[in-house]
Image 1: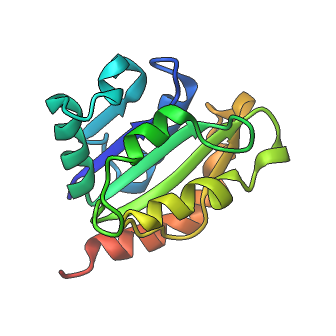
Image 2: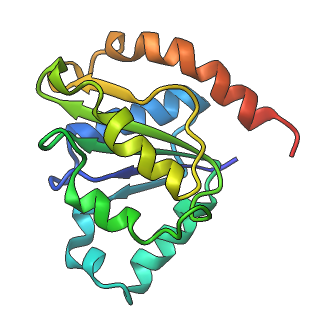
Length: 165
């Protein structure tokens, strides 16, 4: 089983990265195999011929579980994450489970993972187990902010990942 985290926060080593890594670890019991902090790639994300970004797209596409995380900007995910997601072919780009995770300043945008990020992840082939996860920024490092979602979603993720293929 391979797991990945893709973070679309324009600030490297962000709270969003911490949250996404926490979710991946809680769902699988291990640190993710691949962490893509898009902010560290600079303008390479804009260059469709960049081999490093193409390799990351390939690895993410083949992962069994990927947490896609973004801060909430204007009720949506960041343009940086959009640039990365645009590289996946519709319907076949992802082959595993995709977890939409968004952080925001208040509960006002709590539907953003469901309304903005989930449709894109399913369009590019991901299977989203359960609902998307929204965490208020101020609670990004509080396990209680994730507890209910993990209790509902982790059994589904485990069942899918452990099912014979």
